[in-house]
Length: 197
Image (cartoon, rainbow, N blue to C red; front, side, top):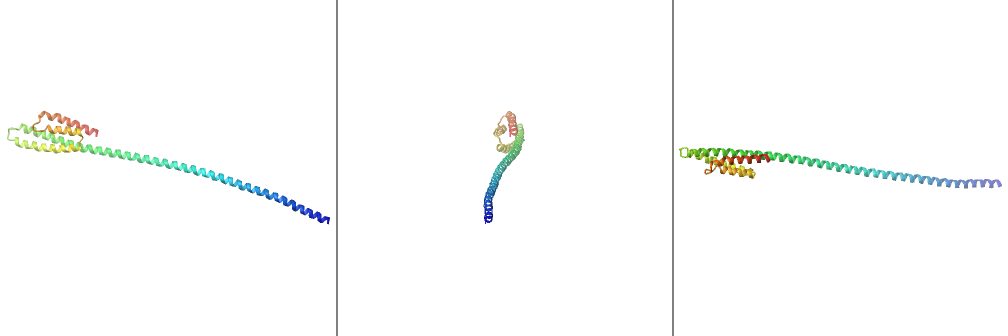
């Protein structure tokens, strides 16, 4: 019986010691597992935070890049519009100069012709040719009036004023010496208008 008791005690002691040891082992395993889970959670949180920072940085870099591309595109479009405006302005001014040059040249041709016919008529006064020369002069004066209308349309005002003065110098009663200064004044005004336009 004593052996049974001793064996029972030994078994009970082994079982009790094993239980206590098992309990400590289980508690240690739980603690280790919880530490592993906590470490994994911290690692996952750190990875998520790093990923978030990286994503935020990438988004900000992309936004800045998009803003820069937008601004570069806007500047390029503005530059192209400016070049187009300058080109159209230059073409408009060139066309305006050509139209004015044609109007001024037609007016000068008409005034020269009228001046010539006026002199011929005045030299023929008192002769049988006077009537036909007067008719040529009057026809030439009508051409001057028509050409003056074009000059008035094209301008500018200094040229129009000079043209009107030249036209008046061709009147039948205007002194002969008024034509040449008026002609020179018109040429000067026309040249100025054509070079500054």
